Image (cartoon, rainbow, N blue to C red; front, side, top):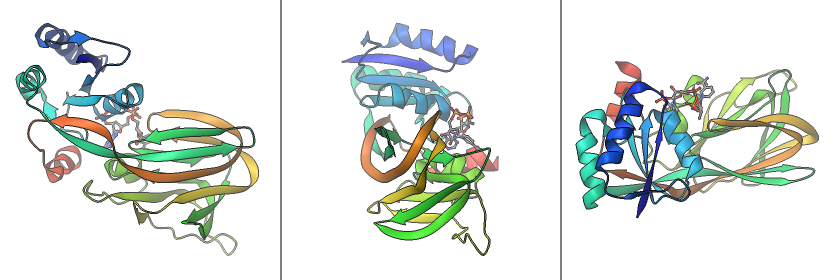
Length: 254
Ligand code: NAP
């Protein structure tokens, strides 16, 4: 059993990293660790998951409670004991599986928060299909597809619903959709069952920006994106369960 620490570059996280390295009785492994301790915020957690998708994650939030971390700064001793004596429990988080097609290649991605397709300088026209049926033709800046865990991130800024992660859902939210006699869309967030498959397709190949959690890149000759929810793909450790309501309250209402 090996471990690695991914940490935010700030004084608290740096100091805590050194403390943990003295106390954890496992070998460090930067290539393929079994356990990953993440010190920082939800953003640090997301980047750690993309580095080591198959590890078991121990999140310590150094600020407010956050949505992915299950240990607070006051619970660091508990975390050390849990790792050294294997007294932790695990839960599994769902991820978006995205297949992006251009005229030249097919790219496979996963996201724990969301994926977006955007064309900031001009409008993007996308056919939105659910389970092979055309729902609408969207025209606007772009679309965001989020998980329940990601519902409190970018999705929330787009006035999407905050979704209890016990509900296995995909959510589509519009980014500055145009509604006119020519283009008519739902204009409200759409929550879908995890059994649904979403397809976003352009009639003509186009340039788009893709964001996958904290990552982003430009795609030339974009044709389509197939998006679905894969259940229980990322493993997160905890000692005691933290109420989702408390997470929402501590992040947004205090
Ligand atoms: P960042 O732009 O440096 O920070 C994004 C902020 O979102 C941080 O405050 C982070 O919390 C918070 N966050 C991340 N995941 C969250 C979640 N599931 N629920 C609630 N808050 C969450 O970028 P980053 O740290 O690399 O994170 C990437 C994320 O930024 C993307 O997945 C996207 O959701 C989000 N984003 C939001 C907007 C927007 O709201 N307009 C625009 C672009 C991207 P911590 O402080 O705990 O790290």
